[in-house]
Image (cartoon, rainbow, N blue to C red):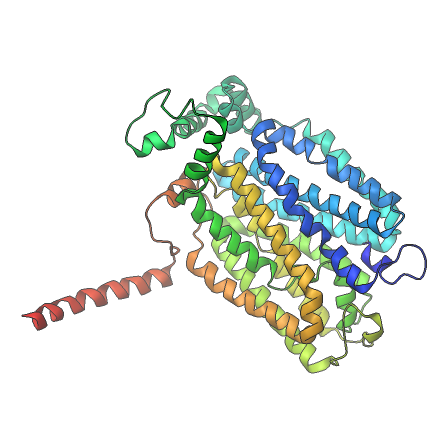
Length: 484
């Protein structure tokens, strides 16, 4: 909501084209810094207190944006927004993942996408009805309201168990299951307690087949403990396998078309010669993102996360290619979304439809949902924080290079490249993404801890592997005969 108003503004604060490319990506660049701190914050203060504390950078940022008097202060405010967003991702997705019953966890975690889309829509809407300073002041009310509302939610039972607070953990579970009586949730609580007790066992001793309390690794120095935790908690297959999968998903999700142009979306709409007012189109994009996110929450329980993720990636890739073909066919080579003087006359409806379709398919993607459930409890804080940090680096890379890619390859080449990345991501996710819907956190952890093949459980993949096995069995007698 700021960039369209300050880009080459004739009065007040004004930024150049190159400054705009940095300003649009500044928040993404600073988000990893916030993500790095979110892990320790999450583990030390707990999920509830962390959800309260992470709003403080946003309060300061919106105030600074409102009072910004020069370009550096504008950049610092945007950087703080990035740090605030980065530091709140891990507590948010971790909290929802840990409090949810497996039967509805997919719906609840997917709904977080809907609220994110709602925030983006409100920002777009504020940018059309208010000057950006007043819009920043209105946005300040959101973190303040959040800090008040968080005071009324319970801490997650699993974190309370990790601190030895069993009675509070049981009370929390009763609240989370609709103020149920302790006897009604006793079975679930016992399973949770058993799961936590297994987590308490020393991983080194467990690997050696012995369980000694306290073990020889208990009284080591703090630095040694950190090294052992990194080596035997993070660099283990039950953490590394989902970590690498999530990283690859974040990368292809980011560079497949919609996210790189988000900071300059108003200008991109103008550059495509879309028939309607660009700010109106952006508001419609925000509204459609909300609807699509809610739709994904409704259908995820029916079709599962795997089909939803693969389908959304494929749809995003197709829309990016379609926009590339349109730009190649109908737009002059001089059109550049960072230069208002090159924009064509707004007259076409087709790019509007394609761009809205791109937004819808991109909104169906759920990388943050997977982030909330695929990591084991011991490494969940650090793994979620590092994955979130990496995702923001991808966001920064994609948005910052958008200027250079478009300058070199025109809009057609830019969206063509995004489409190719989308198709590669579709193939990767189809081959390697397992289905986690309706699975408990313990079951998901056991899956990644096992020695199973990394390929997903899919009927086409399974048929190919079965055919390959049968072919190998058929060739074996012939081999024996030739040796004889």
